[in-house]
Length: 489
Image (tube, rainbow, N blue to C red; front, side, top):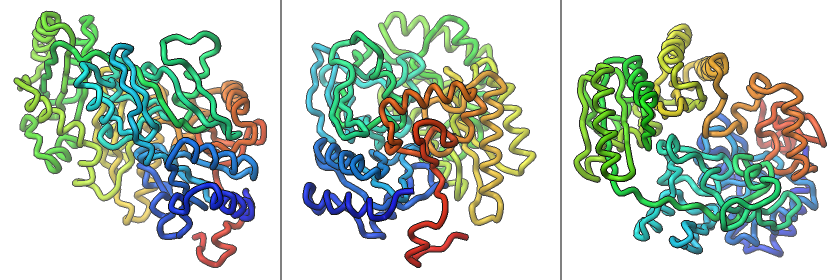
């Protein structure tokens, strides 16, 4: 636990070094930042810093390091695992105002961007040059590059192009001691230990990114998109396995089940096939002749897997219409349920039919509905566990089901996360996937960067382990209790 005097001293120091407008201390405004996309977990930070430059980030981290105050970095706040959940006795460093695209170098297939730049903005800026940024999370219209780097985000097209880690050349990082360092180079394949690879996906536990050099991908000559309707997820899963098994590597294969389709229709009227128990969106890109040949094969494999309807996008507008339902699915679920948990697990894609059936059984046992929308091509599931927080106990039931789904993924040789990170949400599940020795080894790496344990503490790891690692859960009387402004029920 950090003493309140330490945070006060950090604030006093920052008032000299930063603009007053960069400091948020009003309790009402602090509540704006009490959670990220995981609404189930909420913590009001002691202080928020709205960084206006990389130097603001460095100055803030240096002040925290000197006083032993924990800090958490936050971009757009769209993370779904509580990775940017604030620390009650710490500082939240918000980088969303750092939105400059500083350099676009198409001849070198790279761009240099601030951490707060929106994912989609990178492609919009580079597409006129014939390039784009391949990782495309469903939240790409609002999520930031800094958050993508922290969580090693993925997206629909990562089946073919890989995750964020495959598209980052270098990162300017403020270390937990307040030093500025550059990891990686602006050219591919720097020699030595892969510290850049260690930082990408480290969920803010190793420092704060202040600049990112991303790799750009050449825009394809041809893109073809297919929407296929199936009576069941079993048939859609069989089509997925058949397509991958044929040797074709689509840019994307996305699946939505009946409940996810219902939500998307309610939100954006996407006009998916009537009566579908599942739909697949299959997209191929590349050289025109190759795409044409493979697309004909995909259509044949879908028909053989009992697709009762399929539509081919004739142009970019129709392609956008097909994707609109998929891209809006997470938010659309709010139309059919007051609360929901977006879970994230991975399984071998051949296990899709069995896992989806078992997931339905688990949900039925608890009387909880689950909508499924996910990256079928790489087995990255996103079950949406629906519940009503106003119904006593239902939130706990939903969380129990959410954990049981992760157990199911592990039982089939999968993982507890594919692209959303571990964060606060799944730290307790880490020992199910890793041995104590595995976790100790990870902590040794973390301690090499952050021996004081002040960079996003309480995330990824379930319990205090080495080098003074601090527990994420608050112990003892909370400062707000002591101040008489809050009660713990």
